[in-house]
Amino acid sequence: MANWTGGVLTAAGRALQLKVEAGTKLELTKIKLGDGTENIDSIDTLTDLVGAKASLGISSVTVANNLCAVTAIILTSNLSTGFYAREWGLFAKDGDREILYMISLDPNPDYVPPSTAALKVSATYAMNIAVSNAANIACTIDPSGLVNTDMLTRAVGLVQRNTVYQKGDILYDTQLLRHDWHLECTTAGTTGSTLLDLSSATLGSTITDGTVTWTVKRMATQDEIYFELDSNGDIMPKA
Image 1 (cartoon, rainbow, N blue to C red):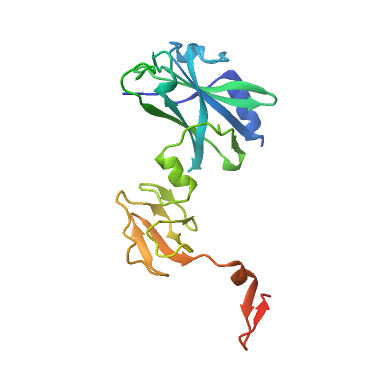
Image 2 (cartoon, rainbow, N blue to C red):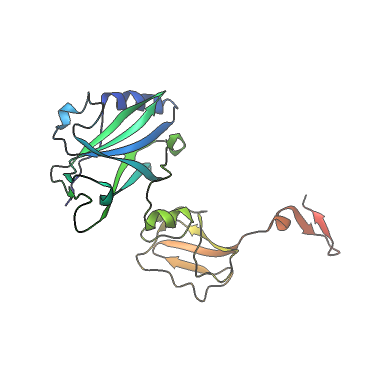
């Protein structure tokens, strides 16, 4: 079972991090996996993984609670040679050059099989990075990168299980009776582990979901945003 250590910044990564804390965007570019056997003390001067075996396009980046989760997916059908994934490297842009920003090591690595293996699998690799300002995180999302079910769920704004939501968050659920209805978080918290039953939900209903409270609301149309009815029932621009 994988047992990645916490990410360690390289010397170049620390120099970039100082710029980020001063307001520069942290632009993440890719992830690499390798089978090198460096130790924590030797990470500082590295510009690439010791035994790089696979370069992965970043599939998603999400930010919550001052943690940035960077995710990539590897398909074993794309590998000519299997390897033990001991190194995980995150790369970033610093000006006009790309640097090795962070490395994580796994003393108990999983084996990533080659395309010739009887069983073709995919594996998701993710790392959390502490951030102080989500607005300062940028990312190069690989258009050919793979996505998993969780990524698709986030992309279309569907409510997820065991997930923290803040008051005012707006999400959707395919069980809602009308396409213009949505769920608005009216009490912040963490959603439960079981799926919601919204079969009887009506406009204005409140739903308890773990420690979150959702209220069913309707998306205002453009006419409702800019126009209103006067006392005679005539349409007039909103003040």
